[in-house]
Amino acid sequence: MLEEYGIKTLDDVEVAGERTFVRVDINSPVDPATKRILDDSRIREHTEHTIKELVARRAKVVVLAHQGRKGDPDFTSLREHAEIMGRLLGGRVKFVDDIFGERARRAIEGLGEGEVLVLENVRMWDGETKSAKAEEHAQSELVRSLAPYVDVFVVDAFAAAHRPHASLVGFMPVAKHVVAGRVMERELRALAKVRARPERPCVYILGGAKAEDSADIAEAVLGQGIADYVLTGGLVANLFLVAGGYDLGAPNMKVLEDKGFLELLPRFKDVLGRFGGKIVLPEDLAIDVGGRREEVGLEKLPTGYPIKDIGSRTAQAYGELIARARSVVMNGPMGVFEEEAFATGTKKVFQAIASSRAFSVIGGGHTIAAAAKFGFLDKVSHVSTGGGALMEFLSKGTLPVVEELRRFSK
Image (cartoon, rainbow, N blue to C red; front, side):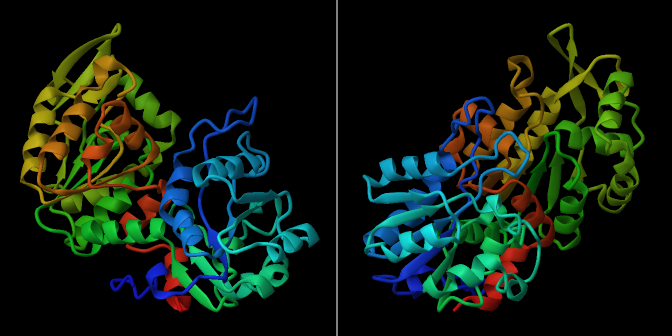
């Protein structure tokens, strides 16, 4: 039982012999030319932590999942996902290129205990991506067709939990039991430690190129007394610096303008004005001078060169704050870590997290990629599977699918 949320888990339900529908998020990077999967880490995560347990407990497992969106290069069948899952489980995984038609229903009826059936990409059905309450989705063609077969519904797709789509919430009103899967459980337990009841001091680190939600997160965690400091890097720091009155120079202002971030300035100014003492901005920056790293203090701004990292003084100051922390959340690298000359800030922040005694959570595709590249993935307490879902959870403290899960957990 997830006591903090009032949500039941796999520990609270008997699944042997039960038709157990599991909504996972195995949406994976795909080569647009060949449609082959480039990274199977999400498939491994759900298979190792949830599906393998259900197989061992002799459930009749039906997997629901999506891959991409119609019209996007990564929109494709789940056949290869099922093949990978089969290899991980040593066989006993079937695939049917149908979602809720006669072939799908026949395949579900034929499932034996400890067997797994992967249904086709749910987004091949146009009704999947509508956002609605569980009761409305329960009247959809998808749910009405499959409802007679659903004994247990397991919600394991944290990374998609910010979207109340049909396959995520529609089975909740019709299933005998609704519980969180192991991936969802691990995410919610970890995030409770840094969002609901963090040990102090609590430090949030916001960086990277996706600045849209950063002001909301900073406002939420500082305004609610969750975080003691918010450290900034990447374009998030650049936008806060502009909000604080700094002119970064033509090339850097153009990047913010091209991304539409200058429209966010009033919001960033408001948040900085209210929480300025706790939003920590860089004191120096690394610029790209013909491919060479040079560092400049804020007093040297504006600059005619691209800003690509935080400076050494900033990295040291951030490291000292992290060293004292007992809870750390990081979403977004400090700079252009893909270029060796500008990976220093991100590396030093990771080193500080790894050396600290804090419970640490990292999330977001670029953050995880950087942690993997520099060998820090196994040196943090929890790596979140969520991108947009993580950002929304950090700012709001919940997600639409989590709220529906609270209502129907039984």
